[in-house]
Image 1 (cartoon, rainbow, N blue to C red):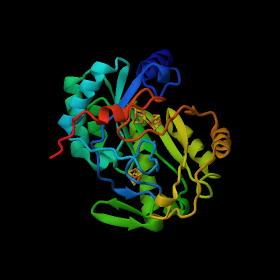
Image 2: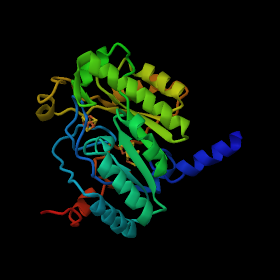
Image 3: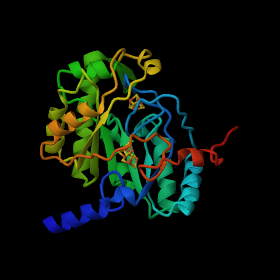
Length: 299
Ligand code: CLF
Ligand code: SF4
């Protein structure tokens, strides 16, 4: 029934800091950086931040093996009582490193069965891994969907290439392929009752005016919550890829986009654009504190 469905959703979000505005002051998340590789190139990426698919250079997150990641989660869980969610959000794409990602989730299910599992992805490979996602009861998946433009025009300005089935797809072809798989993946997740969050990076002059159409599509697909995140561009980064001269999105642009996207879809407004190894409450990133702990095999 409707009320049972409502209760099961509440159960899923009540201690997830990103899916529930109310939970974010009381519950903490930890990201374990077990996924180094990626299968697409975003023009704003520097492989340091994710979930956000963010672009703030200069901070190094370190890579962990699945066993090290679990050790870290158990250690942090002993120190931070509010720890309720473990996310895999990079530094590359979780589903471009399926072995590491699912090994980590399998170990977490075994050694930390009470913790919620969360995954962030560009969406290209969801359809291939939907059974594993369901099997490990990953109840929260974030997909970064920056455009729903079927012509591939907007996408080709954001993604120079997409690597799929042993082949690099460039330009319009790559963008269209990515969109097709993202929409398919989101549909499959929603069908399985997995809560989906869509993140869209607000890229001034590239997809800003288009974001309300993304919001509309997100609504149509039954996505739980939509999160617009401002591009943070830095000269030392922007010159490297294809977004030369595209400025960061400012607060006013973000507010305007959020308002334009508020088409009867639940909007996230408390995102902190976390790094791939973030630890703690959303507002107080303690990754540096735990960075010092030696979980990574330095050899
Ligand atoms: Fe991490 Fe992302 Fe899960 Fe949250 S973050 S994988 S959904 S547990 Fe949260 Fe951070 Fe924003 Fe992401 S504040 S960047 S939305
Ligand atoms: Fe970088 Fe994430 Fe894009 Fe991959 S999907 S290129 S890791 S921003």
